[in-house]
Length: 218
Length: 232
Image (cartoon, rainbow over all chains, first blue to last red):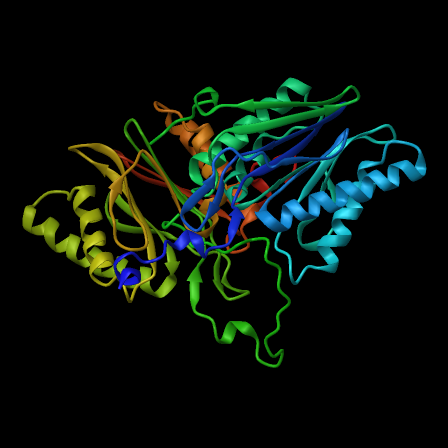
């Protein structure tokens, strides 16, 4: 009787997803990563301040999207593998190594997992790099976008990206792209997290909703 | 989200259908498309791509999706090609009749309402997303959008079709009120180009039209004349 009067809320049985917007951009001397902060289960927002930029090493971060559990697990496993690897070689790991480890897991378990990670960072050999690892492929790109919100900003990033932007311009580019996507995608929202990685290390920043740029609103 | 035909672009599947029967023999003809309309002071600029697909086959690569409904009223069609053509024909007839009874040029709002009535009444059977735009004496340039489902609303700028998802960010960031006719044309051409590069169901040439008190001017921008972007 009580089940008919109070049906179980949908979000208890829905999978938790980071329907999301993530973006990573190279600039001369490093990379900038950005993400929104919304985690949804069906129509309910279960976490509105989640940081989807997860460190894999000091100067290598990854951006999570897709199933929250899958993405977090991959990030933790690769974090461990990368630690072991960097002790073995007695040096900081390359971004390419981190991306390859992520790709290996994504590809081997591609039927069971549904997560897309963008790996970005700085190393001494090649400077700032961004790798996309969607569905088990590995592709180095000047910039990468991912998550459900990314569809809405394909046109924007295609038009506005230029090579060799400064650090400041890249950060603005990332924040603008995130704001536009969060404005249109119901599964993205909250605050914007931005991480800037260069020779000196990684700097994390959180931009609150009212500090985000404003665009024309119909 | 309800306004566009959404297909996740990153789901890549091998064609696991039997290769003896090509997929386009089973699929409906659709104008998976990108359409756009912008108001400016004195008229409207409308634009569309030119691709009609049946599944993976491009049935027509030079389609004209900007259909005249009356002297200074056009509609941009997206969704099922058959449905939108049938609706446009029916509304053209109804509007022509109404205009004769009234003995003056019909209002854009009237045309949009006729589209809306039909799209809402037959919403279960139809798959049509339409943007109605034009110029009339009472309110100048106007754009009304009638997406799938049959709602109608007036907007200063409207995009539609499967390719529109990719340019929401671009349109939101680049639209400004008070643009001139030339700025609107450039804005529309660039937005459509960006969408055509990303959406598999949009492509071909860009068709543009400017509707104002003076009449209608049509333009075509061929593939090699489209604006270029650095990553595209």
